[in-house]
Length: 169
Image (cartoon, rainbow, N blue to C red):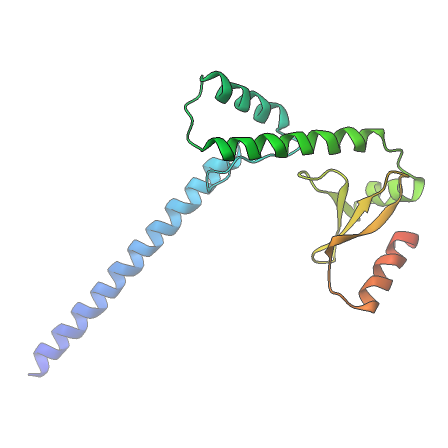
């Protein structure tokens, strides 16, 4: 009786190890797909990656979609959404180029304490603070972003205001 139980236990452990191996294979396949997608226009989920760096390629791809050179794999509503996003990104890039950046804002950018977001060029994330961003205003100064505000405390708001003025966290 005991030999059968031992055989069952060994069988169960072998099956669980096989399941773990299969799970790891799926994880590796997903990671490979993500790595392949990194350099292309699409992210690992198949969505169009619209950033300031690849806007020319995105526009060319959308033009090819319209002319029929590339087979449509998405609905027309999705393509329309992509076109709106490209138009919004282009307008924000254009307005960002017109903006004259103040000396204090430029010093923050040059020091590397803030990093420009590729999808919205007038938004800069503060290095060292999670989910906290500054928006470049039309007068060239920074303002605390209402969307990426960070923790909603008075201390945090004061810390960000001090950072905008002095550049120190």
